[in-house]
Amino acid sequence: MVDSHATLVAIAMMALIVYLTRMTGYFIGLQLRHIRGIQPVLEALPGCAFMAILAPAVRQGSLSEIVAMASVIFIMWRSNNVVVATGVGMAILLFGEPYLDAH
Image (cartoon, rainbow, N blue to C red; front, top):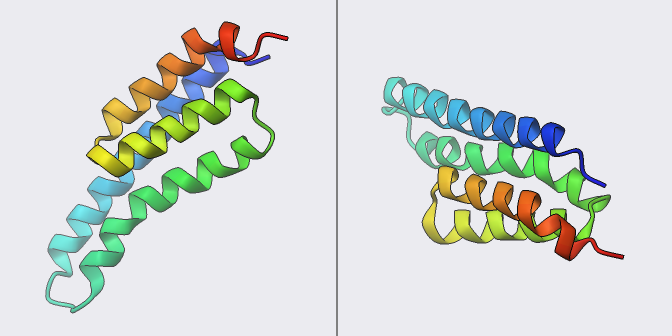
């Protein structure tokens, strides 16, 4: 069973980490833009940070958690919008749990 409060806190923290990582990469990229090849690395960091947090959770996750993460990954891949992806993932966890995890 998922603790809704802890889940919301974890998702909010992940969104904050992704945002801060992206902003830090952007500002570092502005300072280091004269170095060839650094920009693609900085652009890849937010996705890597997001997956490093989410991937271990899926291994032990329930069906609703796996569906939520798959939805977040798909939305991030198609739209590159962290806010929408996180919102959909939270909605699936909050409203889908009774239906997806019913025994």
